[in-house]
Length: 367
Image (cartoon, rainbow, N blue to C red; front, side, top):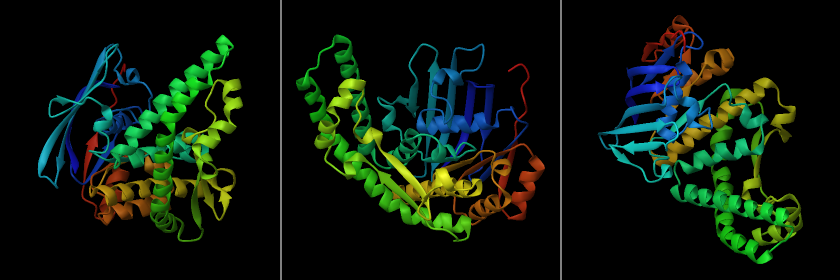
């Protein structure tokens, strides 16, 4: 599968732009601020219905405009057909995703059809930021091949939000109704158990792949692990909710459940966040992304599109070389690489015999 063509209208700094891409490696070069990363984000929108960077669609609308539109044509070799995907958004209106002119009823129906992996300068956030970042990272991987998981996760999050609203109302009204809370808890039990089991199974499945990639990047010098931390590891959902009933009533927030899960990243039994060097963290984060790619490919039989944003400046030479060696061995399918230096991109890819196409992005003044 690969993206043949993309057209942008009023997307971030692009007023109007069109690109025809290679099914191999595409180098996106230009000065800082020219829009290289914005082009990658547009591709991310077509695959995930949302930005990789911004939480709100309004931030993707070009200045002095009230809408953006992204259109892309994906060719799937497996079916030998092309699918036209469009993502449009107008300020004050709802966002629309369409496949061959037919609008999706739910964005979740689109997730996983066109898998994608983004390697970004922000990847170390998976290690150093809060548990919500790690949950989101792994949930995205699982959701790309398991529609039922995504559906149950959305349902669980919606009920938790409703339960929290009710708890806050109880505090304001200075009264508590256990029977109303029980109605929400009974809906949450099967959802929480399903999500917990899927996450636990996923980590056990991905660990061998992750270990393989980390050994490749670190030359096999250390042992790594991912430990799934969940309250449901130690007690049932019902027991956990009962134990936290007073904390919920006092805080107005649901203190137990899979929305509190975390993943402990370890090297030789020690916390990566607390004890690993910057180089070890980069290897760990990159191994996670490579594992994401392989896991999706193994389960869907489709090589995800790989976006490599600013890797020559953010990764050291050793890790960059190892990553590009994988590209040269045709480990990946379609690849996009951004950089400020056209000569550097051409030289690095050419010396490895990697077939590639270069796209020059010119900075637009008065953006």
